[in-house]
Image 1 (spheres, rainbow, N blue to C red):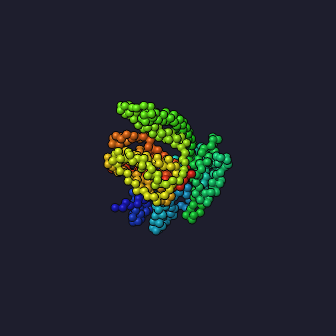
Image 2: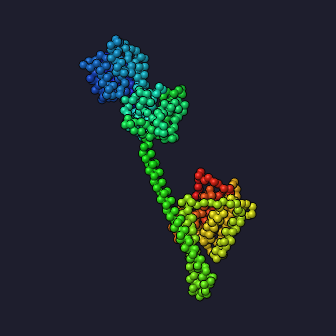
Image 3: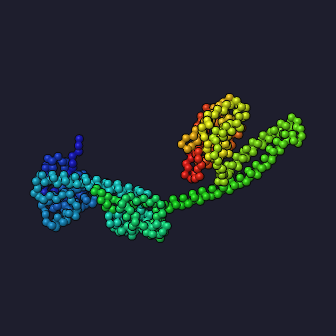
Length: 512
């Protein structure tokens, strides 16, 4: 059941009050209370909270209807419609100050009474909606962690939210109505020029975005506050500009954080460069000594210094093999250090892709045969040529095929395919070996990466720099590499590099 609208009647003539109550009830309203004095009207308004009050002006007691209406307006949000026989200027002037929702002169007819009541109720409802939206807007602006200033069409400040007051050090009451340029002095940090006028002019055309972060606010404490700003014109329903709004934020903390990040990054880069330069020099010295050891071992094995017995030969072979393994590892560390130090250079030349792949296959044929692994090449002469660093290109192929053989099963298969299309050479190396768990694929191109499962770790050489160097060499050529694998089902490494030389790789995005 719909609740009836409640109307309270304040009338000191009881017969008139009863007639009004009867008419109101005939209209379908309810009358929860009547009052004959101003004091009683205020008390019952608080008690019954009616939707509207019909108020006579001349009442019993010391408080007349206007005074009662003023008290009700001040403490209660209840609309008042005056119902009186007095129409003189003095009375009407006093009544108007209380912002009544209607003024009916006695005698009145039913139509006039009902019309004033309905208009008063509707107006009050609309005012409540407006107040609710204004309150919501006020709370929203107060909750923003960005400063906001709005102006009228002439550029005078109409609104400033609390956070803007904090940033600028200004008080809303001191700036309302003042020209924006006098209270919001924004300068270009590079030139020191005041730019708020030009910003306002830009907003007359379209939304203003500050993408440079080179603007600063000259605050009341004579310090410059770096700002991030966006502004826009305020338009009415007819698309006419009626003002401007600027939203801004103090980016002092961000500036300090960026400076700290740059400093930290610079220090880290310097530290890495020093480390890499040390590794280059250190590994170069070790490499020289290992070459000497391997060289002397080969001289002894060739019996240039005399005949060896079986035990001596076995031990010299072991020295030679371990020395060559260590030399390969040191060479990889040396190359990785040069890459990290930024001193690795590429020496481009044009060569046959078919020949390069077959050369690497021939070098690995003995290793593959010892494990019973078949090398299957799906590469034809029509693959053509590529302009690249041949030594690095061969090393990429060698490392990928060598890993595919070493981590393969006895009697397994390694397939190499190559395709040249759209200016890119794409080569895939697929094996039927132990595979890699999906959650560890991201580690495979990391130097000395250690995978958690033991299947791969049982193979000698795991966790070195082979794949890390492959990744670096591919990127140096302006290409990308990816791996697909599943534990126990083999792996597939594929890389793409440009067929022609790329001199500037600054804009390359690596997809690894």
